Length: 487
Ligand SMILES: [Ca+2]
Ligand SMILES: [Ca+2]
Image 1 (tube, helix red, strand yellow):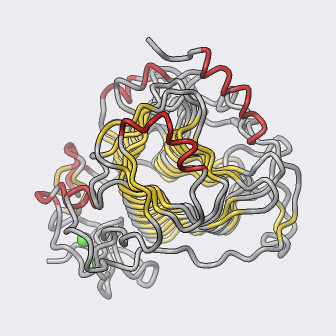
Image 2: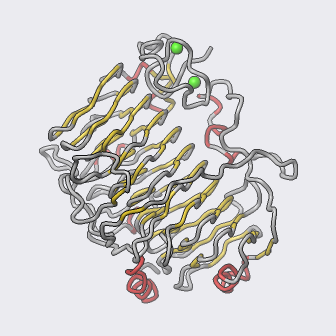
């Protein structure tokens, strides 16, 4: 095996200053008593209390097709690959092709893999690095460190399988993004020693508007996409992760170390991110408890998590983790949750996600399926119209935990319990718990749209969310869960 080479160790040491100490994170694994996540706080950030006075600005979204792009392919969104379980498409495609490059373009080919680092790092702001199809061997040991704002890295439009950036576990990170307005689109990044993509604050200032769109991130050594402050305590805010596929495969799972220190998206102290329309798969280990498919914590704020399709991950979506931050937190100038001590997350909304567990190996693992949604010290969180289905008993379908958690949990459809722990506060309204598998089109096959006649139809409170997982408009009598059944 080529894993854990000398180069990887060297990179590991070199990058500690970037705020990621690597090992020694989640210690909370499900035990036979059902206790999970207790005090499972990593110590991987080093930022001190910092006051930010910046105000997030809107995140750039694709503006639709430009007329110069080829038609979208089936990779533009997982939704299009499962026609047999889908309802009629909505009017607006949430994953249109990314607009064509507007500025200068530098074309690169796989035989230039060894020169990618100087090519990208030397590019002027506004440049698109256009990757020709093929596999790029990036096992050279040093990450591509993006410090110039406004760069775009992209493969052929709409075809994220055509370009593979492969680190062979010999490079700590493939992309270390420390500049605003960085866009990564239409490519696969895989097998980094830690994180195939790591976005971190700048050396001298906060950064914003990092966009990861129609990307595949496969088999990270730790988390697939990491977001955290820089060693100089500058943050990375207002980003977008959309229409992407993030997976820990059976081949990659044995490479995970440190008591299952892995996960899909792991963001610390991040403000104003949108994470939508992604497919996330397989984040669990035989022993230890993986981080969530989508996890924002260490006083992250105002995250929108919607329309993600999460399957066979030990934990689905998490806001916060642990009762306290072990000294790690972020202070906001407007003090959004006055009178509370540590906060794992502030504000934010988790809506219209479909979360499923069905792999017998996941259930047979030490942690099993822990939770579909977990709130820990999450102030003013909204958890609306999600569907959480588990083919075997999980620890919980959803949990809200610790006294500083104050949430609205409404209109959710779950096959198991929504559970309060350790003094958390929440308003629960119109959830349908302990739902049978016959409520769905084909729960065993992860087809989680509502079966006709489901008790979830027309059973949710009105006005929580205007549309559904499919982008379809909810009617005057909304259905419980992520799907509005539109005939
Ligand atoms: Ca309805
Ligand atoms: Ca629907």
